Image 1 (cartoon, rainbow, N blue to C red):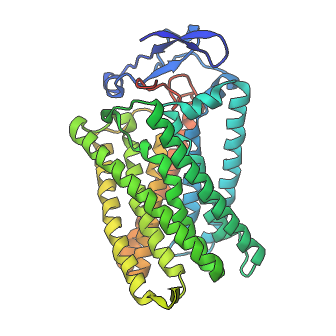
Image 2: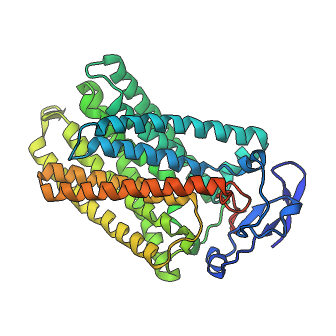
Length: 421
């Protein structure tokens, strides 16, 4: 497939269909690997180990929004260390170091993205309107969500009124920004793209994910807020969590239909199926946290009192219900990965970390509420598995950067989708 489009470096250059040495990869992508490239790359096999190597200034053009999955996964790991039911001396100090590392990573990613947009004019607009890469724009908000919750857990001194008000301001700013993204991005997709349901991937959920995590943030910060702040935060968090989960469930219907009609995604994209684990898991975590953050007797309307002895058990029941949905999606994703593991590294591998962090945190929260040691030890075992997964994906990420398996033309999320208008 060939045509003329503006080049990221100026002028008009052709775009081409890249070839892959693996027929299953080429067929599974169904023509989605179309990339804007310079003339001299037209005949390059991007999967050839002996392909040309490029300098940093060329490669930074392919530093995509999906890199923020590294930050959100690191932040999630820090939160998981804090919440561990079986602590050992120094674990929370390690978690604090991971929290600080996540802040450093986040600002490093911001600097790299800025460098991309400055060195390669036009890439900012193209990235936020791209039919594939644009779905990863919300990951920056997910990374911010982990920083806000991590700050509450690790950096807010007890009894500091100024810090409490700062966290409250960050929460409301986050809600406003994530709501804007949820409305604006879906509106743009509805208006400009024609995405066939057979191409449906879990990344379609990402624009609604940040607003959903407003509920998770609310569940973490509400318990330290004064009552005049806590109640509005919890109400807003519940509203946002309900919006996010409702849209995610609508997306699930399309996802199941796509899987029934077309089978599993290509093996290079199956790690993304773990993204489906996140919405019900984070909702289970949030509703218990928000219920516990409410005052014991809440007078909401002229004598109408909500009894927490009823609300909190209901939250636990609802959380268990949603946890089971996450478990089902987790099992589907694991089976699909075992059946056909990916051959090449992609940033969507971080989906094996962050959504599963929410699943484990929900398991810990349910175990704490039920005071069941079996559940808590199960969560501890899962935490060890997730830490192993995080280290493995991080190792593969570093290796992929060094050998130029990513940040390389045709190998990143800035590859044009065949349905892009």
